[in-house]
Length: 150
Image (cartoon, rainbow, N blue to C red; front, side, top):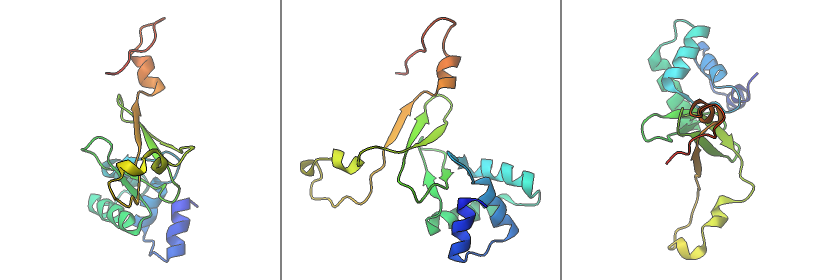
């Protein structure tokens, strides 16, 4: 059983067939699917599942705090089931792949008191951008290093 399913059961959340399939699709490390990707994968497990059920369930999971809505490009929302472990994101600017990363230091400590302007900071989001090995390799000619992204 997936971690997300365990958490939802512990909450007493009613697990309909549709909700169960959506939770199963979201299982795994480095999962950051769009709603349409969740729907496409869910249809493979439950052909009659509707797009509306997927969107509604994802919205409920975000409201419950069991899934994080991630938007790294200003357009497409992705859904991250890794909602209970502090992490940041590493995003490929070529293909859009996203990986969860764990920082060794507290990112809040990087913001000096003098730069907080009296704010009581509650949350820090750090997103790293670069190119994944596959995109670097795809843009490299044989025998040459990958081209840097500007």
